[in-house]
Image 1 (tube, each protein chain N blue to C red):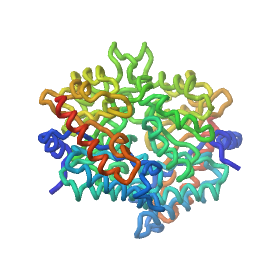
Image 2 (cartoon, rainbow over the protein chains, first blue to last red; image 1 turned 90 degrees about the horizontal axis):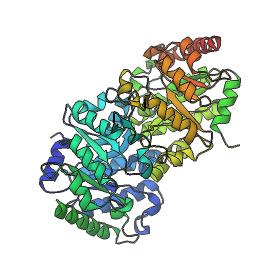
Image 3 (cartoon, rainbow over the protein chains, first blue to last red; image 1 turned 90 degrees about the vertical axis):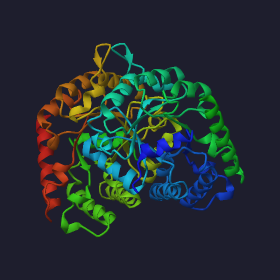
Length: 275
Length: 275
């Protein structure tokens, strides 16, 4: 049966699975026990152990493309194999390709083919600056999740995002456009950083029914309880809470997968408790 | 000697070479005479003929990454081989990787490694939405060109770019920040579409010394003479005028490289005449 991002997400949410495990697989941080001479093999071996150890906890997986592209064609190949492995091991868990793409009109078809046909991702992150018309080929993919960068978790993210447009910060304008105009296929989501729970709450008011992908918990300082309180929708759902380094690189030793599992379990429990 | 984007560009401009040839190599448009069963071979064979035929006219080359990524790891490999061929055949001509990347902080290092070490591009296009702090790893690369998307050439590009911030459209705020704050290493440029020459003129006033990458001539309807008048800097330079399909796919037959050369020559002459 064909995969459908939003249906997969709903299935995970029904089980209270809101944790999105970020596979930001930096080869320099891979424990020696799974290192191979070739980057491709190291990445795949590491990811497979992480996935096997966390597949019953993760509500979604999110490989960040930058860490794979760093290794050229063999990194791209490792990314494809990682996603294939997730589909095999955890067929109900959606895979978000965190690639932050966006070009104009039909040029996006190349990225669509790369992400959805070649990589077999269920969703992709995109930039908003070029507007919804430019993103139409993405938005037309009713079966895929199109996750639009709305509010950064980085300190300087407000340089443009906080600029006032008719008295309202730009990120809220973006959230409103996505929620009211871009989401005709009910396939949009928003990236909204956990480092600013007040902003998360404002975005939730503007976009009550849109899933949020929320980075910034843990290493970037965001607080689980405040994030859940601000980010959840009226049904107490609507969140993909993304944590990467704090899970996958929690131990530098051979026990990394086991430690990743217990970190994921702990975060999952804290999220559920905060609901 | 190490390559340096801005120096290469200055060398081209001194020869009045402002034409940026876009290698948007859509495999479905590659003439039968150079088609191979594998996408990788088709792309490389086609690009090599285009490059050989235009290398004395082009002021820069700009492969758009989407067309290559569409073919997964073999497309990525074809892109690398294309750039390598340009460096061999036209060592003084800078190569712009039109990949429109941008993530937060150190995550960008993966894209930097991909674009500059693995692909050996001299410049890359990036999104502005996440702010300059997030892009610092790109901006720190003094030897490379960091070309920031400022004003789209697509019809719906104004959805956010035209929003007024203190009475001024957002794209001019972006242009000013890049020109006055991000460009400490004199390595920034701006993407400014040719379909709106009035806007191009406004951006030039805000960013007098910044190179412009100007898409939208030809297929998208921009006019060479008005574009040059609006886009040139005080020295009558400062432009990379990007044309892709109208050159590389000007003929669907075996004479495609020859026709590409004469189209490139014609555009180059019109640009020089308009200066």
